[in-house]
Image (cartoon, rainbow, N blue to C red; front, side, top):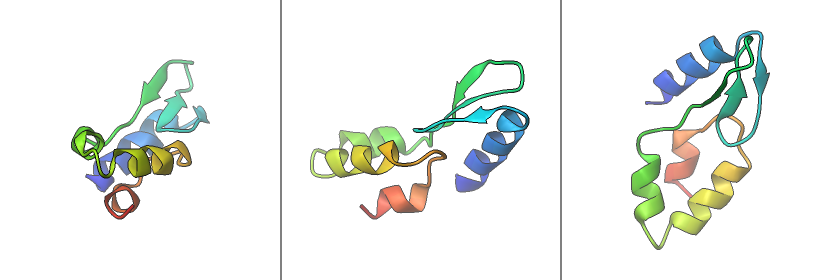
Length: 70
């Protein structure tokens, strides 16, 4: 859910560095990618996969609503 993404994004990224495509480095330098479970389903749809990929390449933190409506 978006709430889970937001929670882990904030907790793991606190004191760290945020990057694009759901990636962040925590305060210890460990890299994490916080990805919504629905991303696999969206990327498997040949009619939507390109639009979904272009949308998330522009995001730092994944935003599920935006991905669902591209």
